[in-house]
Length: 290
Image 1: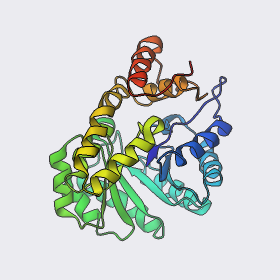
Image 2: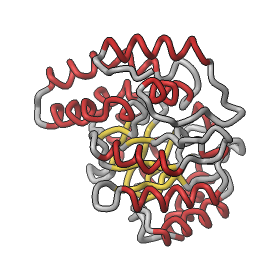
Image 3: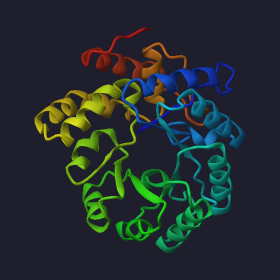
Image 4: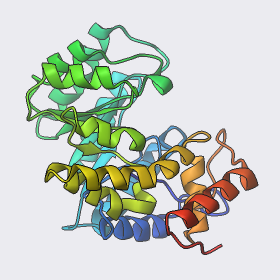
């Protein structure tokens, strides 16, 4: 899955035309599912109207080529349910639901939050999203295991950076429950403890290579998978030298994509980030158009 950026015009409005073009490009270069309006898509600074428009534009652009997963989470359960219900009516194929941020609910509250959303949209597959560095609260493996018993909660994007936690989730859940890496640099290690794939940022640039790495691992070509991982590792780390999605937008601009800047309060580190990324992109064989 690619956690897709949201392109903006110079005036700060969403550039739906570029979003459409980028979505098609990604599906032709290794992406099976597009995650729209997640963290990388700058969801905190998008309006709900902009999000629904993005869902519709991208659904139309990639119809029959890839699935579209909508980031419709919120730290208000009522708001998350309303947003998810509306996205489901538009026709998205699933929803990514983040752990409620800022209000730091206990595990019982997190459980009830996700359960309520899932029950409100029983036909829509739900993937949990655990990223304690952004939310301030960790979704514990025991809570994940309870939530995995809810029929349409089908997986988790695990972004705690803790492989022990990922192993415990895998131990406590059935093999049908999908475990996805939320960190490109941990995709291969996570596969080794039962992971399914990755919700990727780097796939904007190296989607085909990531697809080859995962396929190599799943077909037993471990050395091939390791070689790809190690080749791409400097890029994985460079894309997080500052807050995501600042670096990936800079890298896309180097590649010639008119994705625009990030919205405040995110702010680019201009030359320093771009120069580092240019060097790495050249080293891994990607051309620069800037």
